[in-house]
Image 1: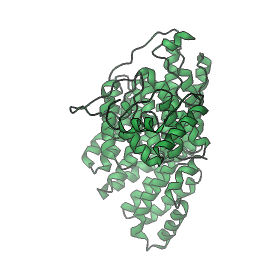
Image 2 (image 1 turned 45 degrees about the vertical axis):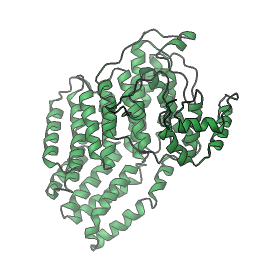
Image 3 (image 1 turned 90 degrees about the vertical axis):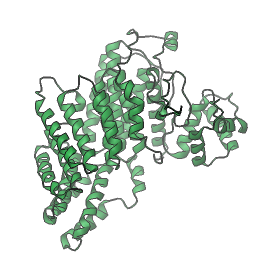
Image 4 (image 1 turned 180 degrees about the horizontal axis):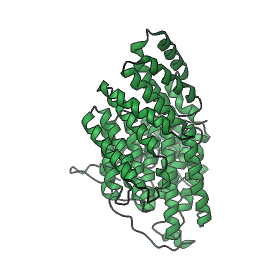
Length: 503
């Protein structure tokens, strides 16, 4: 007990709208449903949790997390409630002694599988009950970067490479106690099972690129939940690393799909989980790429300063094994953030570095599976996006944006439908800025034709940005028709986007 109010729990309690007595009764009822009929909580105990900072014993934190998740319609974890897990890494404190680490980051090694499984279990529960994720706040990029900097720059300690069983696993510090839903008894798996999991990642990744994140997100989250259960068993080191790699790849996909359908706090949590999983598997380049996804999310949400904080960590923490092409990809995200802030000179310098790095990659080292989507078309697509974004500050940049967008479209391979839509929107937007409404109308309509084939809400967000640019040309008959078509294509109530994404 700290003697200080638990402000996190108090805030969530206020949002939920319960009385303290009502919450006590719900805890007892939910605990019994989860196999703990002996639990007896009363109003005074709830008051101590909230007002005095008392941390309840297990299983109460898990019970509370489940209750608040269902009540608020978004994933609420033990960390969100302001409770400290047993066996977790210590929290950073600033010079005044205040906590600076969101969610107690970084997690201790033994907690990563448990956090992964708990979070995915909660996410699946929301899907099953038809609830939607919304309302939580994103952690600031600077807070994440500060919390994870030293941790990401060191290598994880590798434990005993021999699998454990039975009572041995109970005492093993790398064994994660069951913490979520849909868990099964941990059991060993072999290389064939891991190969099948790795193939499933490729299938999910291709589907996401072609159709957007909404239709397969639940399947990816479910697969990740299963992998969390597998990680509770300590496998031989070479298999354990591969399994962590599968977890990292699935977590990135779950995050990207969540971002694609507007579940932003959920997406950020998955990106952080992915970074932890990648580092546990000894793959620092993958951890850096996962953080770069969180940075892209920040730029999309209009927070480029947070994105730059995250990119500093992603670049410096990705390690010496990072290939030039991966470094090039990281530079393009940094450049997009700079463009969003109107820093044209810095953006051009960063994109120049990206081009040099991309060309310098001789291909003698096969790229990891998660980098195979970043090809020359993607390089041009990101350059088009950066210049189109800069054109809001420097209209002359619109012509360069058009050139890169056209190159990207020429180079796009089949199955990358969502990327093509983004290219068309970048191209149309650049044409509007360049005072060429006729060409802008042409490319905007090509984007509209393709949008019905995907479940990506990010395309709607970009389309809204383009719609804003059409206002200057509303007097043109064709552009007025285009505006009406865009209005019909966009959801009338943005808050309903999340519900349709989870069907």
